[in-house]
Image (cartoon, rainbow, N blue to C red; front, top):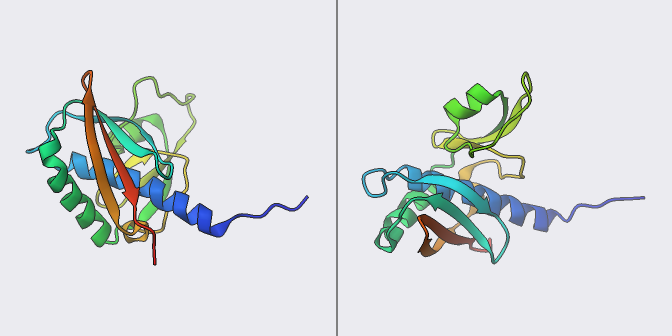
Length: 157
């Protein structure tokens, strides 16, 4: 059996996935505007991408989030993969979800956007932050102590 990879589709998913990490890190870089929020989960699918945070993010901060996201993309920050033990994950990652565990002595895969932060992650990513292209910050929805920020990536021309 021969398997083939759809290169364009893989690149799109890599762009969307990395964009979600950039969005999460951008919010984390705005502590004066948006204090006390933590990434809790994310979904990186075309037409249904979002990052969810525990805590309240007011919709009036959308422009600041967009500007910080744009800045991280513009900086062309390298995207590196690591294998870290639990202590390293907790020390170096922006968010390690409650209940996340790895067996004693084992390591988990993490993706780092150098200079911005890291997440435990097994997904596909672009080589540097500029590879995502334009990220459009979408709606900011709040419910029951959680905030969900949707996003899209603009198709490359």
